[in-house]
Every structure is written in C-alpha cells, then in structure tokens.
Length: 205
Image (cartoon, rainbow, N blue to C red):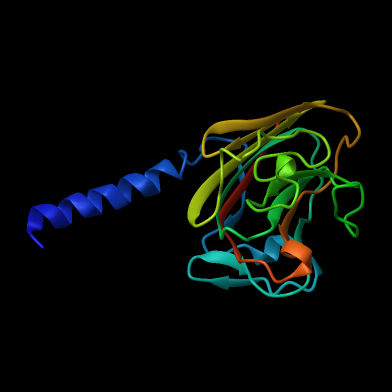
C-alpha cells in the first residue's frame, strides 16, 4: 500500500467519524453526567444490566433489562449524548420519567434506539407511542458512533440523530422527572447488542 493510499484511507475513516459526531456543546449551563469511562457515580441503577466503565465509555451488554437513572429531576432541557449501538441493540433515552423505579414507555417519553424493532415505525429516532418515523427506517444507529440530541421545552419535544431531526411532539402527559439510559432486551426477549455511552450532557432551559 502506498503512502498516498494509506493517507486517503485514514482521511476517509476520519470523515466517517466526524459524520457521526455533532459538535460537543459548550458554554455555561451544561452538566456532564458521562465523559468517557467516567460517570457511573452520577446515576442510580435499575434492573440487572451489567453497567460498567470500559474502553472510554459506560457500557452494558448483558442482563434482561436495565437503566441508568439520573439522580436529578428535569423539566425543560437539552440532552446531548454520544453512543455506539449494534444493529440489534435495544436502547433509548427515557425522559421526564413519572416514576424513577418504573421506567418505561407508559411512564415517560421513550426516545428510541432500536434499528430492528418489530414495529419499525417506533424504531430508532422515534418517540415510542407518540411520534413515529418513516418506514423503512432512514436514520439508523447500528455499527457506528452516533449523536442524539433531545430538546424538551414545555409540551414541545424534538429529537435529532446525527444532526437530523427524526421526530417532534407536542404533548403534556409527562411534565418533568429524571431521565434514563436503557439497555433493553432484543427481539422476542433475546439478548440484544451492546450499548456504549461515551458522553452524556444536559442543560436545563
């Protein structure tokens, strides 16, 4: 392989990396809850997922189901997250949870990360039971690092995956509460792929 070919390949890989990562937010008001492998101390755990620090991220890949639940409650906010998921990973960000001991789509807004969800209309980028995405899925997360931004202000919720708006919602069912990061079961409760969170930040509005 020539030096020029090698440099082209490196540039291509770097371009792909940048495509999956929006600019990390800065400025006053932001609180970092996960940064690399640091951050488990900022969460309460729920369920049996094997959350741990590994290779510069907070990771789960075993267990029937589990959540990292924020210790603080939030009403209006922006969440910025960087994550890696496999094609069969079932994960998501659950916001404004009504009950921190019972996280789910019936008790919070579930911003989904699941490329092969049996009902794909609530797959990756959707807000389960509230805001669908086009089928077949256009925006997928599997096999790469991604960014997700969730903005909730009053009844308005907007979800962005890798800088693209995937769903919007006007709804007041869940006004405030903690938010949670999920490791969920795969299709038909099989073990799904891993989820890796390398940065999670929140800014109250």
